[in-house]
Length: 159
Image (cartoon, rainbow, N blue to C red; front, side, top):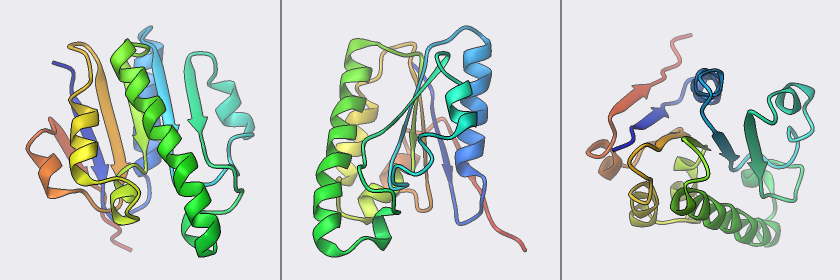
């Protein structure tokens, strides 16, 4: 079965660690899809991220430029639906075998925000194919994911 890797904790570098895994996979000829959550649209036009394509396909489903948690409640409801579309896309990517590595950046935060349930996240991970790896990031890891993860890195801010 494909590996499940989690980068969690309150320190900086979880996304960069996951992107590092994506770069290694892409350099090995693997198909990589990255779906980013809770970050707004802001970085989707980044020159660096665009240079990673087509080897690494990066998606964001949020429409607002602002960070999700900084939005007013009515806008959060709208964005929550856009984010749910991202989860549906992740499900499709996994069930159709469109990649060898799927990175779900900040997906753990969706549980804290009440956009997805812990069980739904577990079910999503179990959709992966035998050779598909899944990497998840977020500040707080759901306890139920510990048992299905092959590798968990707790990124702590020391100073």
